[in-house]
Picture 1 (cartoon, helix red, strand yellow):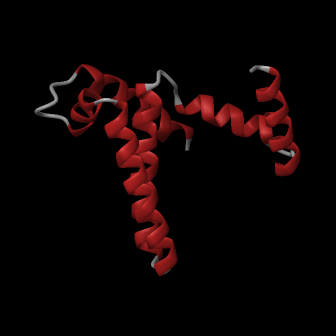
Picture 2 (spheres, rainbow, N blue to C red):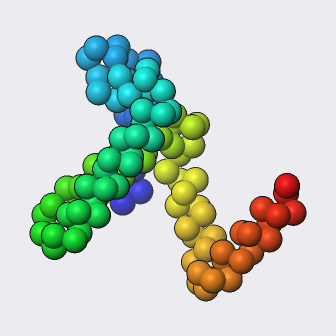
Length: 111
């Protein structure tokens, strides 16, 4: 899985300097973060609708779109998929309730 994410991340990084008239990703980058976030919202909604409908092929397709646009957002923010994978690895084995409580406490101290 990491190989696919890494190859995709490299491609998305390359598209930052591509011509927006010839690349969908370059066009999104040129429009800015708000457009990327709007697209993520649309894809999230489509993923929820697909899941509610129960068609596995649609769920896969829409989730792929959601992940793809999320990867674009990460790249725009200067982040890599590995950053998210590292965070998931950090959380592995922790109760979700404990992890959330720790995060809230950390955020409170950093304000």
